[in-house]
Image (cartoon, rainbow, N blue to C red; front, side, top):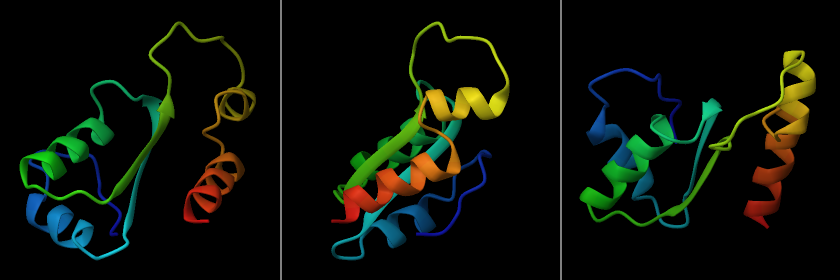
Length: 93
């Protein structure tokens, strides 16, 4: 699936075309809340177009979060590069 820059309007045609590939895992990763971001927008596009790939969304929980250095927080909340790679590998098994 192509990398999508968070902008409006979304490239619905590209998202739908890429997600229709049989066996495709669609992963949206964000470095902010999962609420109201790109992941929800992509999920909505897929639903509206009747496309049902395996879909996973990585981002920060909808909660009050600790303060701290970004690398520490990324590790704590599972959005560091290594944490995301491990999650995607698990999903692909």
